Image (cartoon, rainbow over all chains, first blue to last red; front, side):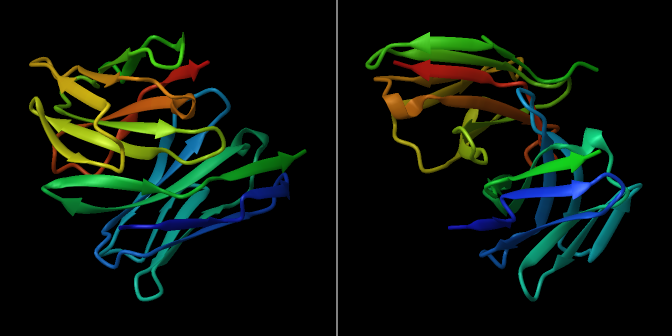
Length: 114
Length: 113
């Protein structure tokens, strides 16, 4: 089955600097790659996603890149702010029986230092 | 438009007991997925329901079962609770079965003692 590896497990950056989180996946049939942000005690929140027919997607300070050949994708956050501190999860999914089923990475705890 | 809601927020049960968790989908969404999130881990897929039918299951034993109702709300039932079942249980709704995006509820924190 699908396996998703996420690195690093913890990341600490200075406010204003950039943060990069990387994920690799095993199932070459995966076609959808979302990123979720989870603040302490709150629900995972979808922040950006990318489909397999696209190499890069950007939304203000957040961008995601996908390398299908290498089977890895990354989240880039620029000009980090204290409110970016949270746990970030990547996920990969493929369509099985008509439905998209998500397989998550282990998470990255991002801390933004003022 | 209302978001995904879950009840209860927290629950404490004893090993061997049974529990029922509830989820109301986002307005207009007919597909619900359930996930288990152990402390410090990513969510793990339990199963998905579409139009009241189970549509795929993760690596969880049969004592994890579910239901979806005509209004697309859903229940997760766990029988014969074990200590390892202690986790945050999340449901996520999608507009329909072919949709990519899944939107999560706030979760139910289950503690088994």
